[in-house]
Length: 298
Image 1 (tube, rainbow, N blue to C red):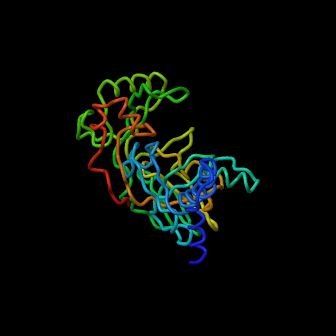
Image 2 (image 1 turned 90 degrees about the horizontal axis):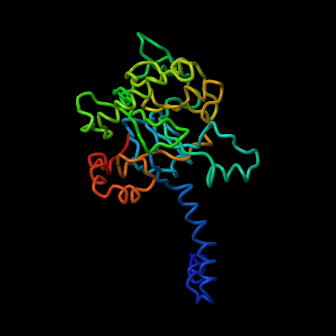
Image 3 (image 1 turned 90 degrees about the vertical axis):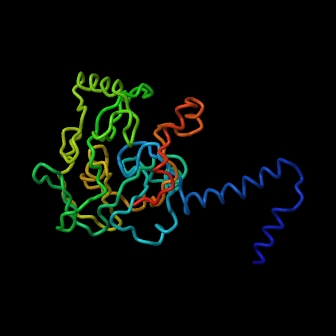
């Protein structure tokens, strides 16, 4: 308690100049903020559809970073972690900089396997299934909707000018529950994709094919501090099926949080909502998915 009083008196002492005040703020406040954001909580925006329809592009989430430091992760937890395919430095300081300050992107997937688990992917009756320790998994969180290509003129090269989005055939394009679409954007994407031999529609419940490989066939035993992570949108997720089958499951040290709460949901790829408001002051409010705001996530 005495140390706290000393610190408080030091913070409140008369400042000699604005420069001195700024330096003290940087020296004291910034490190404290960094520690809190690194080890206590995180705020994340969803950039891709790999977790549809549990998580949609444009949604903002709160992640618990504190309890994962001393509590084991469980099957079904939705986690955030650094890109496992990134070439991390062997230098300790550089490695810490890459993982906590500036480096690989953050990914979000669901924990399917934990250390010691035997994970197998098989095709049964034309459908991909997952076995854990010999038991076939029931996965109610999986995306049950097919994906279709939707043209997006805002996409910049070298990325293709379309996105795969979950599509509910019970609604028209303009009334979709997940993403706003138009018949024109869908038909244009279909025309372009078919011209270049891309698959326009991916049917729910079918095997995921990537780079000529069947991503739903695998067999791996997880070692100490190794995890198997997969997206709920199995047809649109680059996950352990593709980057871990070569013998590199997700290293536990790359995991830094567990998603627990959805704060905000908006059909937008903008990093800052204020930018979207300035660009589309009228349509902005139509993009907000009010029924998906302020919710606990499972």
